[in-house]
Structure formats: C-alpha cells, structure tokens
Amino acid sequence: MFNQGDRILLAVSGGKDSSVLWRLLTEQGYKVDGIYLDLGIEEGFYSQRSKEYAQQLAQNLGKDLIVFDLKRETGRSISELKQRSQRKSCSLCGKLKRYFLNKIAREQGYQCLATGHNLDDETAALLQSTLRWQPHYLARQAPVLEERDEGFVRKVKPLVRFTEKEMALFAFLNQIPYQEDECSYATGAASLFLKGILNQMEERSPGTKISFYQEFLRIKTVFRKESPPPPTRCSLCGMPTIAEICSTCKILASVS
Ligand SMILES: [Zn+2]
Image 1 (tube, rainbow, N blue to C red):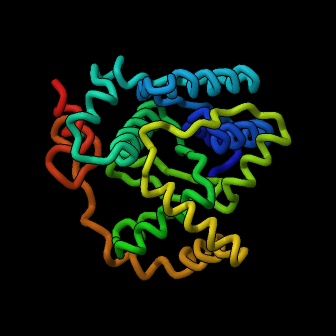
Image 2 (spheres, rainbow, N blue to C red):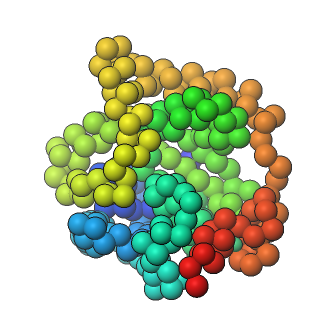
C-alpha cells in the first residue's frame, strides 16, 4: 500500500476506524498526517464534536491535523447544498469528501491518501453494487487504487480485512476515545440497512463477510472491461471528470 518513506495523508473523521488507523500507522513509524473535512453538520453539533475528537487525537499523537472547512473554503454550507441537491445526503457528502481529499492530497504533495474503511463498509458497498450490477463501481472497488495521471492520487484502505466490531474493540481496549454517534443525515441510509443484513448473515454463517470480499477481489478483473472512459479535466477546476464540468463544481454552483 505504501513504503516507510511515503508521505501519507489520512482522512480522519473522529470515528473509531480512522482514529485507530492513525495511531497504528504512527506507532509503526509511518509519516502520516491527518486531515479533517469539516462539512459543518450542525444537527447534534455533529461536525463540531467529531472535529474535537480528531483534534484531541492529533494532540495525543503529537501530530498536525489539517482542517478543511467547507463553508469557509467554498462559501457554501452542507445544509444549503443538501437542500438544492437531488442526491441523498451520504452520496452528496461522499462525493464532496472524495473530491476535496484527492485535491488537497495532490496539491500538498502526498504520495497517498488513506481512509479507515473497514470490512463492513466494503462488503456493504460491494453488496449494493452487486444488487444493482454496476460493473464500473465493481471495477473501481479495491483496497488500493493506483495514482493516475489524470489527477487521482493513490488511495489505500489498510483496514479492509477488519470488521467494525474489531475496530470498536481495539479502540476500547486501547482507550482511544472516538465519536460514537451516527451522523443524523445518515438516518435511513442504504449502507446502514445493508450492514444490518450482512450482520444477520454473519451471525448465521460466520465468515460470510470476509469470504464475500476476498472472493470478489480474486475474481474482480472480470469487471475491468466494463470501466467507463478515461476522465478529462473539468473546465472550471481542472480536476478529473468525464463531463465538461465535474459534479462537485455543479453541486457548488447550485448555491450561489
Ligand atoms: Zn470542477
């Protein structure tokens, strides 16, 4: 995924997975900085409290935390964008997060961008793409996405073989405080529903999740031919896109 000398940017959310990952990578001597994307979710002071967990961890580890404030940087808040967008909340936030994390990692010269996705996240995404037979999503889902000349930094997910429960246990046993609340915008999200179903299957047949995921990785090359055309550059921001204007610029333009 990365070498000892690589500069790694880790997306830190204040939740258990990225918190545990930051600590593990730091303890193992990797050069890893954290970035917190403050989307400004006000319900339950969610973003504020999550940021405080991230800042506290940075202090404990003796690391710097980059804070990207959506409202300050773009002039738009997530609630304004949410009102105008046709997308569901998790899809909108995910789109914005992927865009800005990639952009900042590239601009600041990091060799790779790490995220705390775990086995539950990956199998829920895999189940969703399989149920809809979305070959372009299946082709793109991987623990490592290589850097691409079109403007994508290398992306890695070191925790993909660990379950959510394992990460929670690790955080508990190692006394790593984290944001335990679920984002209020995520209520009713398909990913949470699918995670619940996968947990029921796992309980009935232990090993379901890991075999679903590992066997997918083994056969996933069959989806490669179905990949979408290579991206060009957005005419507004210069980031990679398959349209003339990228979806993030379109989302931001919806609120002026
Ligand atoms: Zn753009």
